[in-house]
Image 1 (cartoon, rainbow, N blue to C red):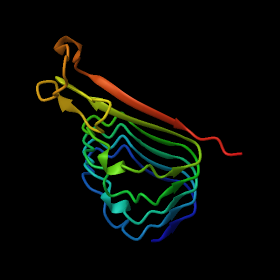
Image 2 (spheres, helix red, strand yellow):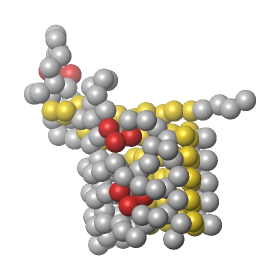
Image 3 (cartoon, rainbow, N blue to C red):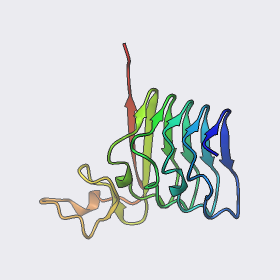
Length: 154
């Protein structure tokens, strides 16, 4: 399978832990949604995906820890939203954003006694965050980092 002509949804699977057999997928010509999969841990099977013709949504996958399988050469013709994935504590695998023609919303849920410093793309514990003159009382749990990027093409 190298191309999906319509929308593709992998949603609300309570038992799905891994995705496989999408290694050769290069194009989804409409929206790609991966949401509500309680046990899904990674989406590395999409390493050859080059084009999403609509929007790309990855949300409410409570066990998702890793997005490193995504190609940094991927183009998203619509919007991209990665949000409410409780165990996704870093976006360092997305050091370079894919080309997104719409807006991009990327959020990390820092839980417990951790924060996301402005210069690091992942959560760190308050105890290990070495910043001069840091008021430790400002290190609040359940901090949500959200990055919204909009693009205007003329």
